[in-house]
Length: 352
Image 1 (cartoon, rainbow, N blue to C red):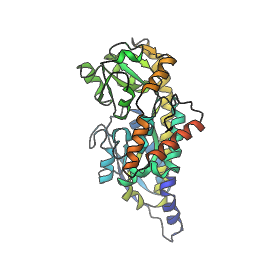
Image 2 (image 1 turned 135 degrees about the horizontal axis):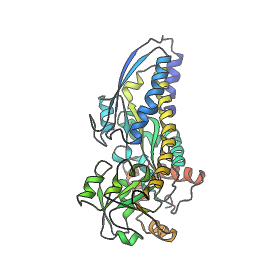
Image 3 (image 1 turned 180 degrees about the vertical axis):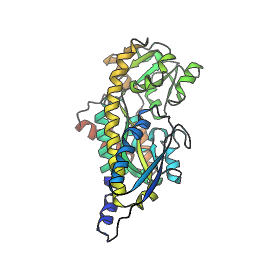
Image 4 (image 1 turned 180 degrees about the horizontal axis):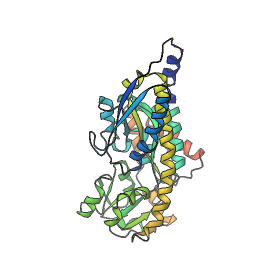
């Protein structure tokens, strides 16, 4: 989904009187997470096969070198690795790089908006294509967003103690990726930064007692072994990142290479959502046999939770505005798009 970023470049290349020559490409793809995770598997299952087929159809040959699980970049270091040229392509996770990729984290500052992963994916894909402020962080840091939005299904809390109401969190230590720790505001819980590669060991070792997670990762991470309580509060599905390429490199490539990688990214995004939805259904079906207790927070408690939170969205937007970014514009565009898509937010985060 290069459309908004590279359409002009493709058009220019198409009208220049230059010949297209067959090239041999040796491309490195990097992620900090291991291949068990869906946003890594989509590379092997869809992105590489489709991009390879498209490039070979144009007479090019290509070999992809996959560097996963922190081989050359840890979680949250992918953008810098791609920017530096150590890899041409990576899964740039905005949720773990909030300073540089601030605007795409808008979903994490607006919980309780929608649990529909596909709606979030479509809205965020459209905003990346049509809202320049959404992609400013990528551009400023030498990478270009190409699509395959990484959507995390409806978040819940997985813990080693039961949670029946928000009050049960008082004094407890709960981990999250960073931006979602603001969801604990008003509960009395203490937020601790962590990620999927640390949750299991740190809950097991008592560093914290629970973590924000989502059904599609609960089974492969085996977190249920140390945190067998799932509390569904309908925090919502979230945008966490997507595929990016080194800007200097891609700008030097002929149009068919750009189009091949774009086709690969589109295929990866479609594969990802289909696999995600199947995994969510399977996870909930397995929870009972795995000894996981699932509790639904009542609608009244859900609304009270949303109403009692700090206005993190407005604070986030204002801070970005003060830095010369477009926080308010992105917040308004996202909330308008979600309502237009049929979402019924529990809180009007864009209201001043």
